[in-house]
Length: 77
Image 1: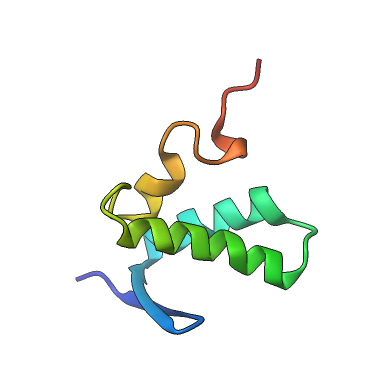
Image 2: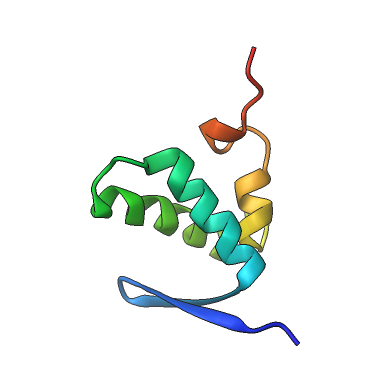
């Protein structure tokens, strides 16, 4: 059984498993390291907001790994 982690963000609460949390933290690290806590929270919000949308995949890892969505996942030329 997967252990769920609760992420409170603004007025929303999301439950993700440890694997999805790893994907979220990796995205925050690569997209907003060295930025303010607010900017780091914005990256989290984008990911979680996309999970809720029907236009994007329904898991953090799928959102983060979706082609062209996050700059650190793009192929280096």
